[in-house]
Length: 76
Image 1 (cartoon, rainbow, N blue to C red):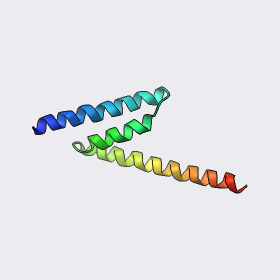
Image 2: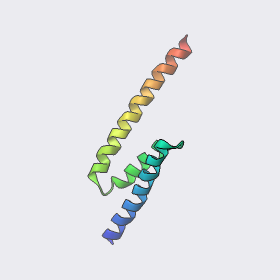
Image 3: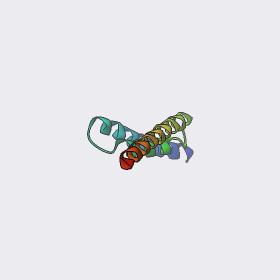
Image 4: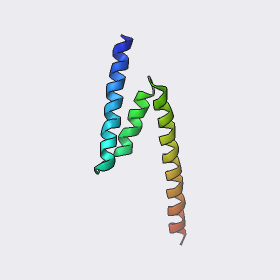
């Protein structure tokens, strides 16, 4: 049963990440698929948890940058 669970997690999470990586080259919601895929994979693979944290840090820094940029534009 545990092997079946790990296989299902690997297939679903890997599929999300793979489709997200394809959408990096093609127009589409790449990060909206990569992050959930890494989240699913992090249940079984510690390396996926490391990459998930890196992605979350990059997204947080991007959001802070955009907030500062929009705040400056709206105050002018």
